[in-house]
Length: 339
Image (tube, rainbow, N blue to C red; front, side, top):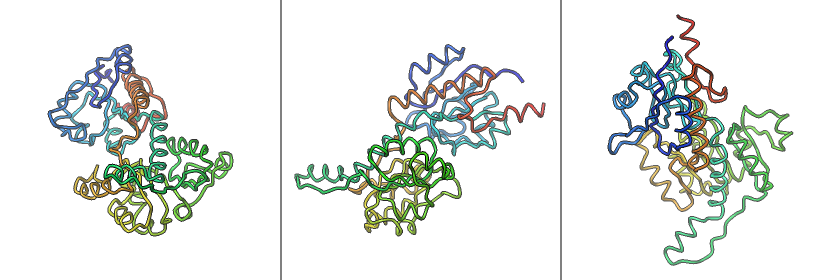
């Protein structure tokens, strides 16, 4: 097999000089893509991607849908390096069959997302947004909130972000319930956590933070039935993927005061624009704290994820293996077996 081209195209924003310099030190030619006017990275069409990636061996990317069609248009492309940890928008089966590598920036943003979750929990519980909205209208009456201290917090999914969140919650003397196949009873005991089934967690938790992957089994895991079984004083935070929560059901639950509030960094409308009216209603509610999928967007996290993405690209273009925890698909071996 011939060596892939050393050209690396970056379509993500906020790619810093340190990561660029690292790639250049590894013999790569770095091109920061100029996107078509009024087009975000997520809106790129397959022909636009083909033109931007012509002759590239590496692609550092964020949010486009990287389908089989797109990958087939890019025969020189050896690695798709996600500057993030989700990869549901990448057809990994096609990548494997086409001999490409797909990586994520594992471990780069868990601290920033965990910080955001804590911030949302406190902001909703203490009614910060409601208070400021009232003050803007000239009403300075005190709104009584609730503490995070010594509350029962449920964590759905216990990967890198869930673990980072649990460490922070220890400082609030919280009782931490975890529902996840990634945590054993023995490890839960060692960490001072309680392993709980989903139904128990939903019924008991004062705060719930969702960190599960979006797969068929988890889609709409939070729906009208689940909201009806949560405490009326419960707060839900979703910083993982929009499809984990049925946003229409969440909107109804909040309007009907079935739950106290929600912190949302992700929305179903990201994948389905027809649901944007639901999103707009959610973010207008006074008991919702919202962000535009920005949990990983801190200076520190971007620097870490940029560098991890760059390391993965350089390793593959050198013919080596990127860090194992970053690899989600590696079609090089499958192709080599056919040669």
